[in-house]
Image 1 (cartoon, rainbow, N blue to C red):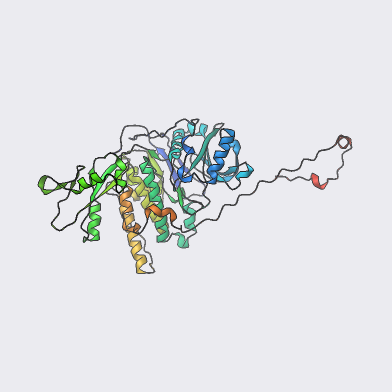
Image 2: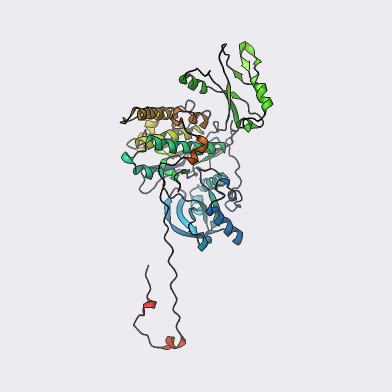
Length: 498
């Protein structure tokens, strides 16, 4: 369970930003009343040394990492003077993002995305803390589907974050290229599965994302996804819990197993917490758990202290221990997010936690499959009213086969459970990603080998123009400098304007 205490949720600014050419607006923190436990991620001031971002096992063998390490070893530090800005990739509420590369000639091909924020401007708008939180979160991340922070430094009153560059753009742009401007069920399953794994890791790290949408899901060069923009994220404490699911006999029906899995029995955390992740560990303890102990009213109690349901003779009931690391008790009352993706509890202001990420996952899937969000209205106010009052409905779709229709039904069932307006009844609201990953829509997904699956699309490598060579400087002799001006221009003296 998360530890809760009264504390401001980063800032109390009241503003709204609409990006040029965008169909949506971003709502900044409107209202500062919140209840949240802030966890120390190491660092706070912008000039603190970026020690934690130097070790990323998932990306340790990348050429980009090697180039950064080589420059840091030679110069003792890394700064803006080591980079060449190529072009602007985009802009947001906090700053601009640029495509850049190292100036060293041997680093050709190493591309980076640099986010540049004006600290003075953010301090004036009371949003500097949001930028600091984003940097602290990025320093801690080490996951295949989350950004890699190569370096962070200051240049005058600017703060720079050097991250991984994704040449495939975002999923919002990718959806526009699809037939009918919507993804197929198989493509939506692929992107949703990788997003679930990214959210699972964030929640394990005590981070509530709060800004999931296609525009923030980037496509790497290998076709896999990467979540971006953590300036609206919430940090909190999270305590692992051990759950035991009472399984039905093998001859039980599927619906019965689903009902049983939805009602886990909670067991206090054990030490070590992660021991149940590894089979064959603590065999003595496993033998003790296998032997039932008599309890009250004919129930059997396991050795950890949880009670399992009584069984009839001939039934084979076994427990599946599961570690749940989900900040379900984190609470914030900040009004943050994108209008079409806001969860009902965010709009009502009663306080929200990690369940908002599973709501946004449902909206995210809906938009990928049907090409629009489920509650979009004529205005932002109408959209918010629809989220609170309007029941979920699905447009009619034409299925080419019975198998495709069944896949649509599974997807609709998953979205229906994710878009439950009551966060306590929402899939993932109590036990997090564990119950989301068990849904029939993800049947057949090998969660441990998702990175090995071929993506629906693999973007073409980014082409960066080579910087022009410096013009040859013509040196005149003393005799030529003393001669009268000759209007005839020689070929080697021509020059180009901008």
